[in-house]
Length: 614
Image (cartoon, rainbow, N blue to C red; front, side, top):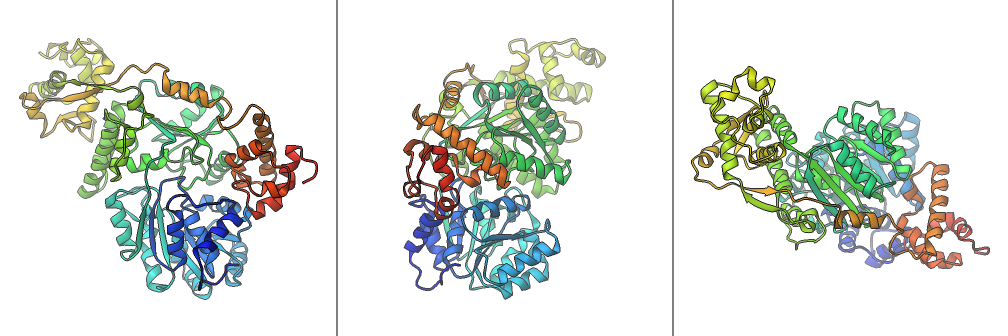
């Protein structure tokens, strides 16, 4: 078990990192957080996905006296998290509603006997008096509140059960607490700190930059075909996540990908719990699967080799978008964050916001959406814009779509006036309101059934928009919505004027818009195709060794019923394939090979390498 708290030196934490996890040094920021928590201090940690947040409480839990109690909303993933720790030789367990009485009693007995290093609890367990009494009777080393943004109503994934976690400090004032999240603006951070009573805690804010992720956003034309092209041309055989807004869209796109030779699974709240669990388990344990999901999937997913995250519908907020795209490339390897969005996405989300909650909620959600639209429509570096949203500065990255293929801006004042004039004519002359598609048809002079039915070919604005194509007019309307120069009526989705429209109609305001550049398969696609070659850090001789090690790992993971990365990460296998250790002692020096994994898998790895005597 863990050593006593008193007299602990930072070097003990580093020794634990080496012995248990197989790493020689902490990542930037980790060591300072760990030292602070080991010393008994409270901490608020904001660190992006893949930055190594879990080590910030796992190592203090091992070093301090007692059991580290982790409050996590991720019930479906607790077993995998516990499996990963046990593979390292860490004594871990969990208590949640998926267990029967006997299973819970075994874990409770282990906790009371001081046999657990880490115990995961779902937040709702703390509503049960028996669970609180259990913690009173045991020896708690620290409380870690994971996914702490769940306490914030300003952020995303709000969970009411998290509101009661401020009581931890009141009941156990001498036990240090650490709250961790990957995504939070300054407003969200302030709310987390306030709601959890962490005003006196030390704050640690890491950089939000994920340089290995290439951010790309493009207009939605044919979402299915655009997605298929992305996967076939750049991510063939890769694991990835595709996010859709509705359950129906999830089912359709999963079926479409499967029919086109890409193994894809659906995941949404309409599936029964058993099916969701089975699909999640397959995604975690198998290589190259694509999960098509609503945002209900993904929080806490610890799969390091997700090579792409694709959005087929506009996310509701930058925070949500950042967290979801952050599930790609946790291993630091090049990955893609791709989003296709169109006019209908903006209309649909505006309608949803207007039809939900009270005025304060609608105002908050509108601000979130405005920020997301600004990211989509920017002509600046996507990464710089993302970092600025979270209060950090950055230089143009040279790796996002706007850096690789810079878009142009153009003076769209006259087209904007034509759209607004059409809305005005319909309203004032006919007392009618229509959606964006009909407005565009009027401007293009289309004599379809609806135009003829309402006699709209007699309007003075009929056919005055021949200078732009249908897709270009839709982009104009989309950007008018993004800039707040036109709005969507919530009940029918009709376009209506805003307080800002008049200045445009009177010629008092210039409207600048983004013009999408032609995007041939240039650098972005070439970069991705190059990734399909053997990893750059592997020599030609090392590639077959790496594949042999992956095959061994896959078979071992399947036999044990755990995800492959629980055995070893790809980065560890690459180092083994490159260095070709000839003994257990040499294998023990490889990054990611701790004592327990060396003892458990060392001989098998050497056998896979063809070493006769380890």
